Amino acid sequence: MSSKERTTAEQRRVLGLTSIGSVMVALDVLVVAAALTTIRQDLGASIEQLEWAVNAYSLSFAMLLVTAAAVGDRWGRRRTFAAGLTLFSVASAACALATSMPLLIAARTVQGIGAAFVMPLAMSLLGAAFPPERRGWAIGVFSGLTGLAVLGGPMIGGAVTEGLAWQWIFWINVPVGALAVLLVRRWIPESRGETRGLDPGGATLITLAVLGLVWGVVRGTAAGWGSPEVIGSFVLGGLLSLGFLVWERRAPQPMVPPAFFRSGAFSAGNAAGFFLTAALYGAVFFLAQFMQVAFGSGPLQAGLRLLPWTATLFLVAPVAGRLVDRIGERPLVVTGLAGQAVGMFWISQISGSAVHYSELVPPLIVAGCGVSMAMPATQSAAIGALPREAVGIASGIYSMMRQLGGVVGVAVLGAVFAAAGGYESFTTGFTRALAVCGVLSLLGALAGLGIAMRRRTSPGAQAARQEPVEELS
Image (cartoon, rainbow, N blue to C red; front, top):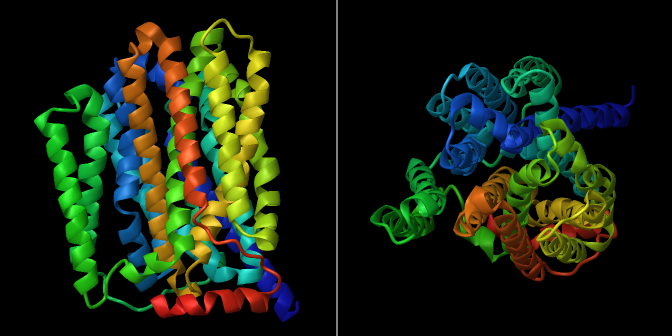
């Protein structure tokens, strides 16, 4: 086998195994969506506890992403990735064994910690394995599979819940995770990022800042937006965020070098990713329930009814990844998120009265094609804006912004839904929630306008584009 063939085979293995890890953790973000009704009946859960079953995972996931990326750069990306998969699998078993909502929420929290050490390291390993001229294609495949896992979560969760039991949506992670760890240690070469200290002060500040801000959003509806708990959480989170920025400017080896954000593509890509995921996760959370309430579908049928939306990711995202390499990210981000907004507004308008399922298919396809175009492009804009040695931290920041978007999206849409009457006025709350999804998508499209127009014509051009940014590291 020639050197080129060995390199190609190694790249395919890296792409396959990192995608498996990403699919596992992305699937578990919303795999419980279709099982929420069953879990509520089985464990006697309240609506707030059901939200925490989703958000506890996303919150712990988001809090540790930047720290996990820094740990991986220092201690080895493969080693950290394998450790994250191991913890994720063990916590999945704990979720399956939970006999009460507090135990399930606690296990989901630990599961999110494991996921935090999987997702950014998956992207770091991917970025290290592929040269710039092929990275767009690889990210397109990776993003397509990851997005398919997010949107396919309700369908898979519904099939498992209806065919077996809701516990099996977690049990399935155990053998898959164990096999993935063995293959990762055997087939993926070790890599490290730029040598730097772990910056424990920065890690503590950013973790607590994220906790404060997201806690306020999640608790807003239950505790009251004007309550001391919520206001105090926002104030504390804001002060800790400012403290983190000041710390990072003065730290000799900052976890997140402030100079990274001088790149317009990096900042705009992260902002677009935040709003994209906020709209996406919020829509999945409510659409899976809408299919059951409006049409009397079982968990599996509800997931199958979302196929016009979910299947587009598998078809469109890889093509979008190739287009990123040719026309740049901005057209795909702006057009894609605008398309997602159109689909969300469309569903909001027609679902307010008696609606046939066939009427939902066109807007689901429009929204699905939109997010499929935008997802690999936002990721490419954020990660590709920085030099190759900074891909670990770049992926950690992007993953954190995306998970924060998911938590905020579910919490904000939950607040809108509850304010409209909640489950007693489900249709009214649903239409308003989906309209907010459209607004979030438009905000993402506006953020995407900040990504500079460019054309990747050759590896040399790509290298030339990245050269000035290397000064930021």
